[in-house]
Length: 168
Image 1: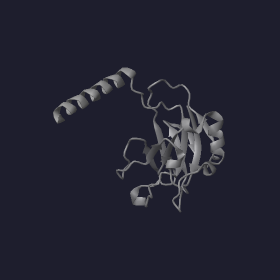
Image 2 (image 1 turned 90 degrees about the vertical axis):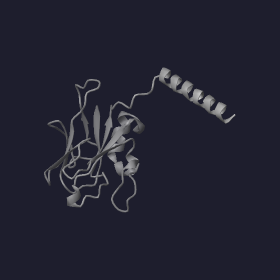
Image 3 (image 1 turned 30 degrees about the vertical axis):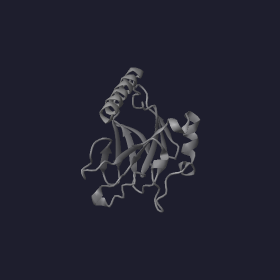
Image 4 (image 1 turned 120 degrees about the vertical axis):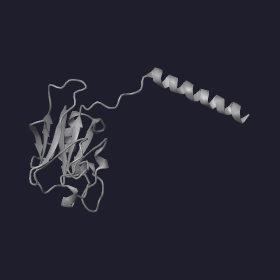
């Protein structure tokens, strides 16, 4: 799986770990790439985002000490805001990262994760743009099988027929 450092808007020193291995820090150049190897299908990855300045760490799917999520996953970089005037990220703002990512795969194939590095008590703005990473190789949600869709269609036709009888 490829991981590319896409954007940052953080003054603190922020790090992204896979378990205990450092993948990328916000002091790295935008477009820095890390590769995770040795993965198996269905394996859950333990990503931890750490604000080294404050000592706080955050994990996807786990509420932080303030009760909030500090990692947001989106299908496009344009879902993340920039700092004032609160516009959304553009290809130009990704800079070198855009070229690195599109050199590997089309931008639409990437999944993006944004991190918020401050707790609510530290005046977090919860814009999830302190660090934004692109991930390639994350399996999409499974597509329903054709038989499942056929059964759903038959059920909907049956419901429509029953409703038509009742109104007639």
